[in-house]
Image (cartoon, rainbow, N blue to C red; front, side, top):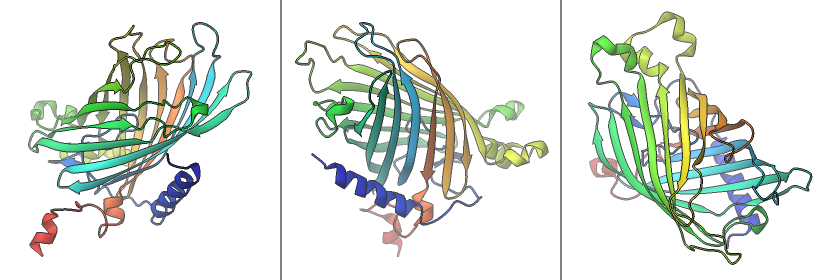
Length: 319
């Protein structure tokens, strides 16, 4: 089990590295398929197996009270960081850590780290003219690596996942103003390591489905038509994300999730995103939340270190 001290040192180190350079104003980051730049979205993972650093992602949300009244409405603040590194061409590994702050209504607050999450992703198919990409991979949440105080599971959860992205740049010119649209999404199946708990409660498998619908103003200005009155917004990507979970067995339950309207601001070295989190039903939460993220494009910040695989680097072969 990782110590809290080690985790805080690791997070502080990542923050120091990320802050070494600042953002500028030209979009030349990774995540391209043809002319299309697919930004790393805030609530859902993007389909690219590249070097990425998300630091921090901060979300604010109110969890609903339990149906039996035992657990009151609880304010939750999550602060997380994610680091991904390309190991082989088009194959990347990642690690995510989240510290959770809980404040139940009328009770003393508590905080602690959630279970450490490890991920893998491989780009299996790309079609640049049609701005399409498909990747496979998944995540594992390491049971017992988090704090019991915030309810971290004692068992691991395994989630094989499909990742996809499709831009609309191949539409006919008669529909040119629809070309900046793009969709990215994930489809995962979360399998808990234990079907039941000691208290008799069940842990169902969960279908995790999420997608983001975005309209790229940089794409509009650069590849469709330069619109004069939109110039001040040329680095913005408005979007709406849908992040859902549906239990599928062992008593199942309600689909829960949020609809997240927001905006991304792009530069060469970083991306800043902000979204509202609107609960889809009462089982998700009683109030609208918010999520904020800073994403550093470390392949452009530190091109000698990042932006290429560790093994079988074709650039090294050319030298």
